[in-house]
Amino acid sequence: MDVRYFAVGVAACTILAATELRAAEVTYAAGITGNAANVFEQLVAPWEEATGNKVKLVPMPASSNDQFGQYRLWLAAHNKDIDLYEIDVIWAPQIAEHFVDLKEAAADLIPKHFPSIIDSQTVDGRLVALPLFTDVPALYYRKDLLEKHGASVPATWEELTETAKKIQDAERAEGNSDIWGFVWQGSAYEGLTCNALEWVKSSGGGQIVEPDGTISINNEAAAAAVDLAATWPGAISPEGVLAYQEEEARGVWQTGNAVFMRNWPYAHELGNGKDSAVKGLFDVAPLPKGGDSGQSAGCLGGWNVAVSKYSEEQEAAISLAVYLAGPEAQKKRAIIGANLPTIVDLYDDSEIATKQPLIPRWKDVFLQAVPRPSAPTKTAYNEVSSLFWNAVHNTLSGSGSAAENLEILEADLEDLRGDGW
Image (tube, rainbow, N blue to C red):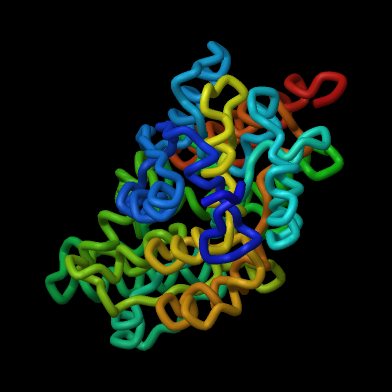
């Protein structure tokens, strides 16, 4: 082959031809949740075959906190062993200096993505990461149990509390002693920031820190939302939910021991797996709102791929990044992993709609998403998030009321902000 680029599936998503690249092995660091490793292996196979290169997956902890901490250590040391990093949508402003600008390499691809996601990965005019998939959580619910007990999908957090308790108690009275009403992510980590932001924002309590940098978290609506959630552990949720991350919640749900679950799209495909006790028994809906005047607000997530400035295989790494962010890989990821594309046209793709009918429906959930305050707080975001999730976790654990803890949080955030973020 004598051309510089080899197109895989879609001309706009080009990858470098094997004759133009010496055979290389690139290392790819990514968090592994659910069946992510198997999905990744299938995704990179066409690129490996086309280029003659190989990809080595470096599995990271499922906890995004632990993952980010390890990334920062490697990048600060200018580690040459990792060529590509899969990064959370909120990390770009904090570690942008360590990544290659991908704007030129992905020039034909950029217009295909949701502009807001491209913007989130652009720092000081540099496109430091390419979108792989977006993420917005939903409310998973047992269709069979709601029908059995004459209940509707709850529209508010108050209704969820009541419905979860009603069905849980009725099922236990019939001998199903392991059933819980609602499982979610209550451990003190980034996932709790996402959960609690959803409660607060959907109740009219703001976004912790507003887009203009105003600290808004200390208000009655936010306190009421967190106080309501504090009634769940031991009542409609296991006491252990205060240590749950995504996989712990999915474990309870997938064994058939929960009526409702808050989780990300990846759990849908696994929940319908052949070994799942809830296969075919559940559906999803937008997360509840806070009261009659609120609005559903799923936390905007998503993952992107960045190329290290310290990589000695930058050419091959950039090639892989562009391929993984392109239409063919995103379509394949949607079909086999149930991940939400960031390429707009894929929401109208007939094959995706046939094989993953949930994805076109999830677009409605996506349109109600709320971002975490990483843009206004920039490099201080991790500390902001940590202060927030600890204040919430204290309340959930019974250490102070939400009003008390959010007042302390406001003061801590003011100290952190100083003269500006």
